[in-house]
Length: 85
Image (cartoon, rainbow, N blue to C red; front, side, top):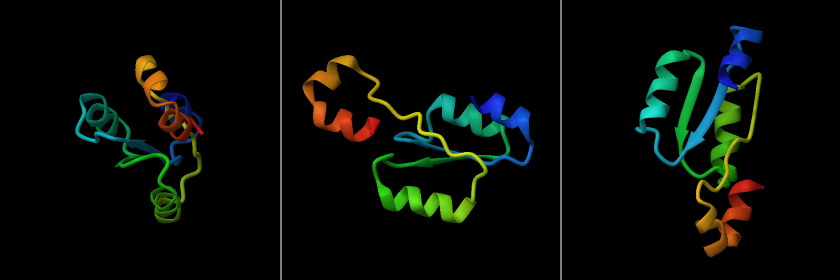
């Protein structure tokens, strides 16, 4: 998705949120795309989202968060709903 967005317009800013900004994929992505901002936090945190949008004024905003474990989604369906919605 990042490649597609950046290929449409090099001035696009994409903001990604992760629980681990030091993960291999987050580090590789931020190194590959200069206009990619990766923030560490909870995607359900409205204050975090508002701050990121106000600070960076991205051209594209997407929500790609999801519960990564099917088992966890059954164990804690309320958290899964919060993350996905």
